[in-house]
Length: 566
Image (cartoon, rainbow, N blue to C red):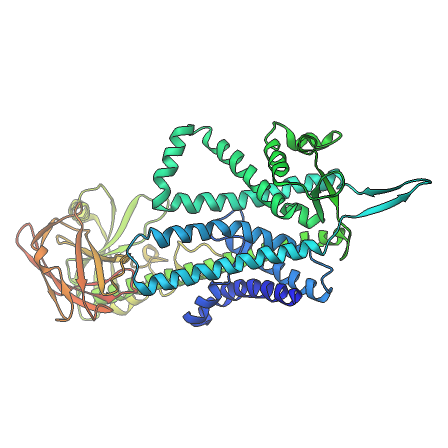
């Protein structure tokens, strides 16, 4: 009976984690919510630990539990090392999550409805039940093992001799247990430190013990607790489970909780971890305990050394997979932003006049910005002046630079169709893209000054130049939209805004308001229909010249499209 329960529990835990890790986007929300309740992993946060990503640790742990389940079942309960390690570690590492769950049921951040209370209690019950299964399973697995011994028969007496764990095994115990303790302890502190309810308590304790010695106090306290809990409940620590060793008295019997506490406390003696180099460990001699070997029932321990290259392969593969996914996501996002910018540029080029300036990308080694100032506009040919201006922080630095150099500027004539050749179509053509599959961008190669150059922005001289950035919505209101409006031109005033849809309510009462490069104006909308929004913004400059802009976009658009209508 226990064999099937333990196997099913291990398979449920490992497969839930693997499915969520690799197929989360391909399964429906209900199924993923169910799997998430069984996603018991060594890590509960995505932070990097020991320079390895949380996803890599999770993958490695789930694979190990899956292999342990198969080995346990196929060996007919003989190969139990991996599960003996995994179950108690999950039990201890998840216990404080249950305590935290208890706390938030009785002291929630916001009042809970009746259904939410029932759901929270049911979820808490499920978690406690799973932890109980971990505990009972570990006790059952421990009963399958017994201490390795040999019987020595003398003339008049018989003596039972037990085999002690070697010094190298004790060294492995120390190093491996320290790693597991670090992972569990780091998460414990991070979870509680990030909880608003406990931040004041942490500060009070930190002040009480002084910032310098506070980490040492935490390590001593939780280190003692770590060893006491493991060795009092299971007579072993994670490292001892893997080497099939256990803590006993000299006669091979289970020791009391008081003895384990004395043993755990004596580990804090300075240089105790190095005492194994002598005749024995100090925490052994102080508590009068011994670490004995258990009888081998499965494969030899040395074969587990093969897990080292397997782990290295898994972690390396996971690292390169994560790097590749991140690159693809970054490229997809960059192309999305590029498409949004291109839409704005294409629309702006339709209304080009002698007040229009095309901003080109600046060379990394040149502090001067490059512009094409429109001089003459015909049906098919447009004449530009090539302007190099160093940015001074003055709102009118382009206008002043043009006036100072107007008679000495080189001119170029371009067809309207040529302007389309100066628009980036793929972020891989951008100078900001630095991967090996970078694509060349020729621009207008027949004109040396424009070879490899593209239109980065379209501006209007002696006028405001609006840019609208989408603000992320961190509230529960899905019908809320917020745009951050910047003025990259001359100082002005936002007179009013005219919404296109009557179903969307904008903050029209906030206007008129000043609008210059030091002041951000927020456009806030609420209502159905904000997925595709459009409105007009009326702006007056300091000479009371009026500009009408059309702002449109979607909720998944980083930067809204801004078009000067008049």
